[in-house]
Length: 355
Image (cartoon, rainbow, N blue to C red; front, side, top):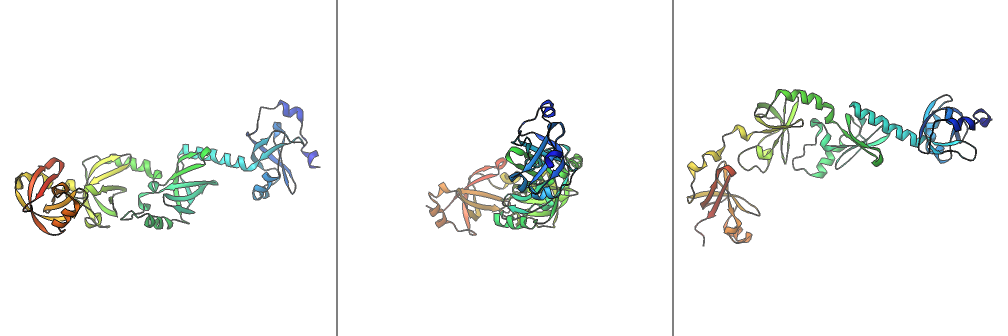
């Protein structure tokens, strides 16, 4: 009886607009039984979803009623019974990708629920398509602030987002590669762009330290959050940013660059550069006292004043072993100034009184 209801008219089918295997068509559910779903495709004839295609989307099919409109993909032009064999699963996925493309083009903000994490970011899905939200695309307030950049610690911070809902934009998508990349920070880019029109390189701002990492510190001023790189915290060598600034501390900083909504700032640019006056205090050939701060592959770093450090190169000792025999961290020794280069912030030293 079902066949009588949806009998295909071959003359109409031959006169229709061309379709082929892989085409996505729209139709109306006209009949169903325990293992098949019949879809009226209008001038394209009658389609059927059955067998594996039926059981793989059984839950979806259960929700369909006679008269419902559906999209399906043609997987066989005509089977032995004269029907076009269809796939609801493939068409649904293709339609989802098309919907996602439109969302990306419109710049829509959507909500997603985080379902998992990996070392690189957060896992979720959008319209049934698996999606990835990289750590680098998290909003500033959600970026994991891990002082030593330990991957396991970052992973633990990311796991706190599982089950939470975030607002995101689609950053990139490629259906062929099943790639869908999301961005949380992109949702505020236009707003940030407008705010940043009020700032320029060289401006001094006052803000609050919101996070400290091994590569520097984050500072928030108004609705903007910028980065103070470790090299911009102080004129002297900084090994641990947490020793210079603390979360919650309010400081003044200078904007040294604005690039693609990213703001880079400096604390040291607002301080007196100790290297500007160094040649008034030290000269080539002088014998001065200095404290050994630490060893490196290049030699020993020597503090000759509170803000100035020089290098006693390893070549002055012949080997790292010899250097560590003659010098002890924290101890004060006499050194001869071999070279001063203020612009490069460089001072070369030689240990004296040693054969």
